[in-house]
Structure formats: C-alpha cells, structure tokens
Image 1 (tube, rainbow, N blue to C red):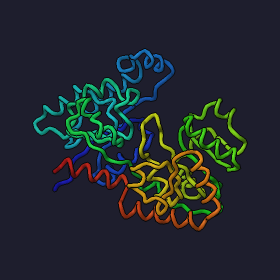
Image 2: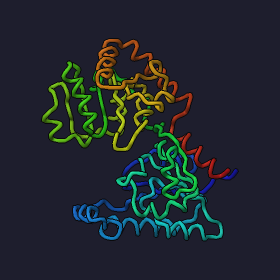
Image 3: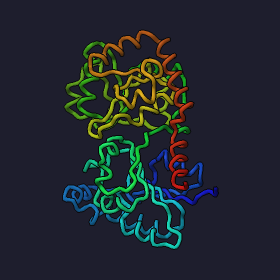
Image 4: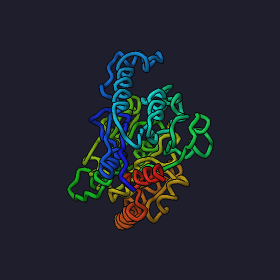
Length: 341
C-alpha cells in the first residue's frame, strides 16, 4: 500500500506542538497546518461572548485563511483535530474533486458539549467520513450520531514518544514531591487541600487556579500558578514521588492525557478510579486508584512511605505503555490504516 498524502489541521497556533500531528508528520510525512494563523486579541473576546466570533475578528479571519490554504493543496487524507475551523463548504469542495480525499476528524475533548464545538463543526459533521473521540460517552450514548456524524468512533488518548519518556534525576527539584500538573477545578482543589490539611505537602502547576483557591489553600498546598511544559513537565512526571491524575468533570473524562503520560515517563500514578483507567493499567500493579478524598489521603500516605512499592508499580506502568503501545504514533497509524482499508 502506497504512503498516503496527508494534510493535518491542528486546533491551535502554529507554535503549539500537537503530538498526534507530529506522529503523522514523522510516520507519513504529513503536512501540518495550524488551525489558527493569528493569536486572538482582547476585542475577539467580545465577539465570542456575543456569538459573532465566526463572522468577525481574528477567529473569522483564521477560518478564512485556513480554508483557503486547505483548498490550495492536494492530498489523499484530510486529518482534522477538533474541527472547529474547517467549514462544510470546504469539505463539499474536496468531495467534489475527481479523486476526493478521505475526511477524518479527531478530538481529545468532549465535543458534544456546547463549549467545545462550534457552528462550523456542527454544519460540517455529516460530511466527515470518520470522526474519532477520546470521550467514550460520545459514542456509547449516541451523542456524536445525534450531531450528524455518520461514523463516530472512540479512541483513547495517548503519549508522545519523543517527549514522554523517563528522565530519572535524584537531584531533580521534583524529587520526593507529591505533584499535580493541570488546570484548576474546584473538585481538584478540595481533594488536594484535604491532603494538605492532613499533613501532605503538595505542589501544583497549571493555569486556572483562582484567587479564591489560593486564599483558601492550606500552607502545605503550594499553587505555583503557571504551567510547566516540555522537558520540565517530563521531569515532574519522572521524578515526583507521586503524580496525581485527576479527571476533568467539565469534560466528563473517564481517562485523560495524563493517564498515559505519567506511566510513560516512568512515574508513579495515583489516579481517580474508573473502568477505563482499570482497563488501561491494572489496579495496584501498574497504577493506583482512589474513589474519594479519604481514599486519596490513605493511598498517598501509604505510598509516600513505601518508595520500593512506588518504584515497582511505576516500572510496571511504563512497561504496560510499551507493551500495549499507547503512543500517539500507534494511534495515528491505526486511524490512517482504517482510512485506507
């Protein structure tokens, strides 16, 4: 089978790395177009609040630029991340070509929820050949089908082979820490603050941790107030004593990107217990799970005091990542092979 010509459209700016897009570039030589050619400004927030962002301002300009650039290219497969910027008119024009490309979509977010989709995506939904979602509820509850997608499929998230790998360093600033890296949400704050009030020191990195959370945080809960990226992120997951994996309630997560990134880095993962988590990593063998704040506290105390158990479970989790190949490279290959079948 010949190598397909693939055009990937991401959901962000050109400077933002997308692991799946990079996997497609590396394996198939895919060309990657950023969904956003220009960063949005303050006025664009006004258009968004008024529901006019797809017709006025930077977002509207980005949509015009992107769709013009798509139509200027020849390819066998158009691979769209999220899909909020590729118009129905563009897909119809592609399908009218003598050799029409396959149109594949993929979203790590819960695109059934209004805050994650756009009128552009809703109009284009019936024109996709296949649309993959990382939220199983989108498929099992018929949500994407109700939006008009003809072939919705569930496919879990993964890890980036180039970025998420063990970087062991006993001198790391994260060594011995109980760490969470992620966006601030009230449920996460309450559980982490419960740990802090009970004598566990916790370091948190990420956006969205509000002034009210900071004001209410116990002294043991250190909210750094900014994300860590690249090898700093890998360092944190590799060398923290415990890396917490919370699920975002706003997105109805049953697993998340950290589900795979923490074990891929050789880190010890303490995650919320779900059927999906237990499917990907065996409980108490390849990862450890909790149901509520009290179990989280008990498991944190238990494993902070047992570095040998942490090392054994972390190594087994890393091995599971490799054996089951939870990488975006494998996910990309599976989707492209399915499109060629």
